[in-house]
Each structure stands twice: as structure tokens, then as C-alpha cells.
Image (cartoon, rainbow, N blue to C red; front, side, top):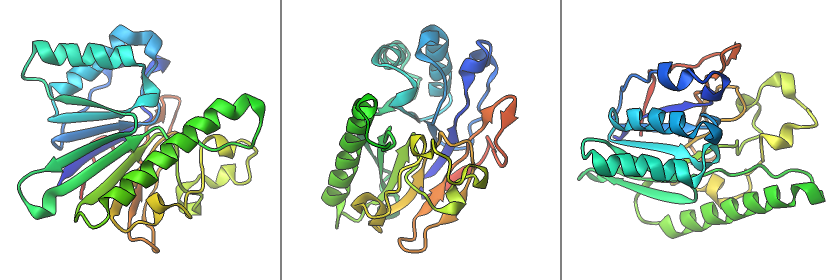
Length: 241
């Protein structure tokens, strides 16, 4: 089994001090940071926050919507100077394999932003193009992994599920829901039974359930804004896959 601590939507940008005061207590060797973590305009503070996590975890993953390449580069440079730091992995159409010497621990992480698919309009063309690119990448990776005997985990920024269990009932039929959620139920990346867990953020609504058709676990652990924290968030919770 592989143990992972999954946190999302910490929204450190709401207070510049949050980058220093938001402590994550390590409960597993691996940390996944999804959803809205901070802003790239706070580059130095964001890098310090990430570097602190690298001192605590074997590997830290973050979906790439939260930062730009220069933040990733700064974090990697810190690691080169300090061999005691863990590995930082930006999830931007990224595959990361965990092989701990046991067949049951053959795990593959697939991570990308997965921008949502919004109604067609010229102003959304770039957004939808990014969504399509991530979706093609996910489906291609899943196809390549078929028969490999690996347990697949998918981490994304945006939600892949319109299932009522994954969405806040207060926003049912909202005209802006497409900015947060895209129904991927007909896609290979969703239908594949090799995928054991799909975790995401951005919706500020926490869920933890099993998709009956595939057996995969659908999970979020989102903190949300300090002024409106999402119910059910647990910073110490660990998932074993």
C-alpha cells in the first residue's frame, strides 16, 4: 500500500502570512497539493512554502495551475542545494511511478490541470483547448498502462464528475458550473478500472465515495477560504492505495 496525504484549495494568497503560518503535519511520505494553493505573484513566499514541504515529505506533488515555471525552478534549485529535501513534482501532464519493491506497491500518478470544458465562445477558446489537450493526454496514458498491472491515481485541479455526491447541491443548475466541473463519465480515463483513485479540488465541496461502475474512489479534501472553510476538511487525513 502507498500512503498519500492529499490537501487542496489552501488559498494561501488570501493572506501573505499564510505562506509562513500554514503548517502541514506530515502523516505520510507523499503529499499532493491540488486546487488553488497560492498565487505566483507571491513567488518568493510560495517557493518558501513549497521548500518547507520538501523538508517534510519524500515527494510533494502540485497541480501546475497554481504556479508558473519559475516557481517550480526555484523549488528545484533549493533541492539541488540541500540533498535532504524531498522531490518536487509539478503535475502538468506528468506521470510519476512509485515502485517500492512489492507488486502491490506498483502505483502510477497521472497529474494535470484538466481545465473544465465550458460552453463554446471565442473568449473561451484557449481554456477549452487546454481542457482538450489534458483529456487527450489522460486517455492516452491510460491506454498505454492497460495490462501493466499498475494501480493508477489521477490528480487534477478541476473536477471530472457531475455525480451529485461530488457537487454542492446549492450550485445545482448553476450557469457557471462548467467553470468547475466537466462530465468525463464517457471517457476512457474515467471508465478504466485501472484507476483506483481520482482526487481533485477547486469546487470547495468535499466528497469521498466509490464510483459503482468502475470501483474507483472519488475524493476531495479541500480547505477553502478562511472566511468560508469547506465542511469535512481534515489536514491530517491519509489515503492508502
